[in-house]
Every structure is written in structure tokens, then in C-alpha cells.
Length: 212
Image 1: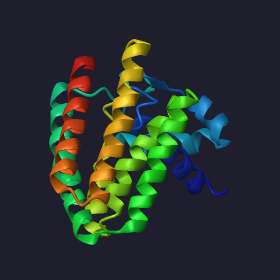
Image 2: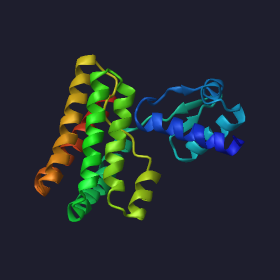
Image 3: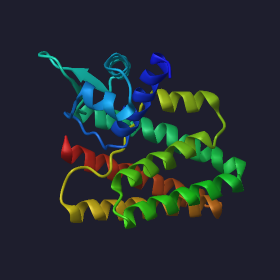
Image 4: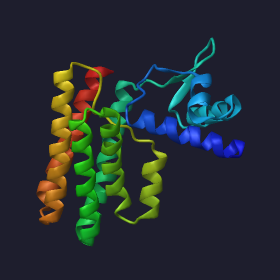
């Protein structure tokens, strides 16, 4: 595989882990470890890290090293506002489309999320959570909206570090809220879908603010 292709592969993998909160703020990204994991050269890994730095997802320390960038209080508030603008708008478009195939896809993602949680594969659950929100955006078919969402590098707010009991409550609430959004879409109940999504985002913001 060409060097630029390997660099892109590393970029996608690290980006996914950051946005799904499997790599949290402050964690050091070791070039040699990622080179071994992806079977890429350290040059390709470094190129991927540079791209991630350009997207404000990682930063380089004064004494060297690459670290996942920590979110500030303002970051959390800004992301929360952006998510509501984009995701509520996307959900509104979905209600005009009444796409049964899309609803089925969302249901399958909900099933996947719950299965991952039941198996205690929390990294997979985080990725399913990201996929759920991305599918809502993709379902609009609006290329500009999709590009805006992807380029914004919107991270999860859920599944932060804390007690296992609190984490499990968060997983359960997330699964329940996702399912309620899909059922509201299925039943053509806009108010229920809107209220649930906003509650979902509010809860995520609250959890994130406690961890900043």
C-alpha cells in the first residue's frame, strides 16, 4: 500500500478513536505503537498526526510527543450548540422524506449498540453511537450538510471516565434515547423526536462539562 494511503488509514483510525471517546484528551499517541498496529511506517503515522493537528484533534507538546487535545468548557458548549443546529435540522429533513429503509438502518444501529453493551464491548458501543448520529445526517442526502458535519469533527460526549455504575447508566440512557428517536420517526411524531434529541444532547453536555 502506498505511503499516502497508509497515512490516510492511520488518520481515519485515530480520528475514529478520538471522536468515539476511546482516546480521551491528554492521551499520548506514540508513533511506533500506531506504526506497528496499522503496519505503516513512522513517516506515514507522523503525516496522519499532522493532519489531525490541522483539524484541532491533537496537539504536539513543547518537549515533543503528540497528544489528544483536551476539550475546554467553551469547546463543550460550542459543540453542543453546533450539534443541535445540525442534528435537529437533519432530523426535520428526515421527517419530510419518510424513508422506511433509513429507519430500518437506524433500528439496526440501535440493535448493534445494545448488543455491544451487553457483551461489554464498550469501544464498539461508542462507535455505534457515533454511527447513529452520522446516519441521521447522511439520511438527509444533503451533501453540504454532510460535509459540514464531517468537517466539524464532532465527538461523543457520552461514556466519559467515572464509576462503572455511572457509565452503565449512561449507556442505558443512550440506547433508550436513540430508540425513542427512531420510534418517533417511525410514528411520524416530530415533537417526541425533537424533545428526545434535545434531551439527549443536553445530557451529553452535562456529562462532558463535569469531566472538563
